[in-house]
Each structure stands twice: as C-alpha cells, then as structure tokens.
Length: 294
Picture 1 (cartoon, rainbow, N blue to C red):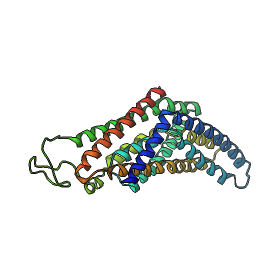
Picture 2: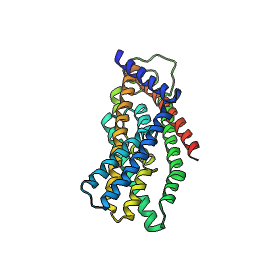
Picture 3: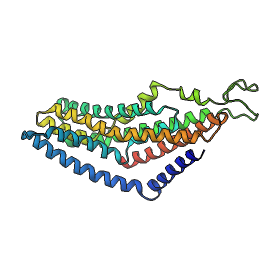
Picture 4: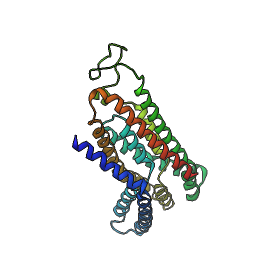
C-alpha cells in the first residue's frame, strides 16, 4: 500500500509544480528555445547535404529525432491525450504505448499529406501551410481533445450509475437485490478495448501536423530531395513517440497505483471517479489551448 501512495503523492507534487508554480511555462520556454536551435542546425545540415558532405544525411536525421523529442517535451496535445486516456481507462501499458507510437507517426504522415497537397495542388508556400496548421488545425485538434475529455467524463459518470441504497457484497458478482453487478472487476475492466477509442485518439493527435516537419518537408521539396524530408518527418515522429511512450507508462503507473488502494468491490466506482477526474482535467486544459490558439 505504501508504494502506490508514494507514486500518487509524487505525481501530485509534479502537477502542483507544473501548474501552480510556473513549471509548465518554464518547460515551454526551454522547449521552444531548443526547437529553434535544432531547427537552425537542421538548416545547416541541409546545406551540408546539398554540398555533398560526408555524414550530412545521418546528421540531419539525428537532428530530426532531436527536434521531435524536444518538441514533445514541451506542453502539447499528444501527451495530454495519451496521459488522460491512460489515467482514465483500463488500457494496458503496452497497448497505450503502441497508440502513442502510432499517433506520433500518424502526425508525421499528416504533415507529409498537407505539404504535398498544398504545394502540388494549391501552390502554397511555408507561411500559408504553417498558418493553416496553427490557425485552423491546432484549434480543431484541441477541440477534439476536449471532446475526448468530455467523453471520459460521461463514461465515468455512466459507470457510477445506478447508485443503490442497499449493501452489495462480492467482487463483481451479480447483486441479488438489483439483479446486476455494481461494477466490473479488475479483470473485466482490463479486457475492455475498442478500435473506436484508438481512431479517436490517433485522429485528435494527427490532425495538427508538427511545424518542424512542415519546415523540413518544404525545404527538401525545394531542394529536390523529397525522400530525405519524408524520412526525416517520420524520424521526428519517432522522437516525439519517445516522450509520449514515457507519458503512457507514467499514466498507467498512476492509474494502477490508485486502483491498488481499493478493494475489488469498490474497483468499478473508483475507476469511474478516475475517469471523471482525468477527463475533466483533459477537457479543461484543452479548452484553454483552444482559447489561446484563436
């Protein structure tokens, strides 16, 4: 019992520092500075690649990974979705980590589709593409994530109903008074999964492509080395996934630590409250992002 409490208290201290003492703003500034530095280095690596310098290609792709990593280290919607869903839903760590990787790669794919649709069909430049990504796709993505949060809240509330005024004993057994179980057991909840959940999560993350990937893809298209930029965009996605996978494991660890503090009889109700709290947090923070991005 002591270990789950330590995990929960530790995460609580981190949350207070992030949102109560300006930790999130500090991380955001550091991540933005690092992204600019890496982006400048990427431009230099592209020049070296055009000049035929040895090792320039591997250097560029290494910088792409670094950009994806520092991009994900700042406040972002991918971590919010994966963390909130993992905390509020009884999904396994491996499955959630897989969703994190697929979502990051899907975000890279959306950058490739946006750039080549824009330059080949619409004749757009970098400013127009980044404008669409930041002014239209970002608010839509955050709005979808807020919807994910509200969906978790609703699902949690539903799992808390109906509220009965009679005693119920037995772990997940059917109640003799009302004729149904008062909540799933840990084993039942762990078996729940849905491809619709995966589609919603991946879509909400992939809708907003990474600005760094747009920058890279446009430059490599202009230089006539399209494949270098496309591979680099997916390498960025892998760098982003390195952070979101860690968030996935942290979210599952928090959830399981919290659930270890309750008995099986109270498992369903506790998981319902965790869904309500996690969903409310995701929805609130996402709506703040929507407002700030308008």
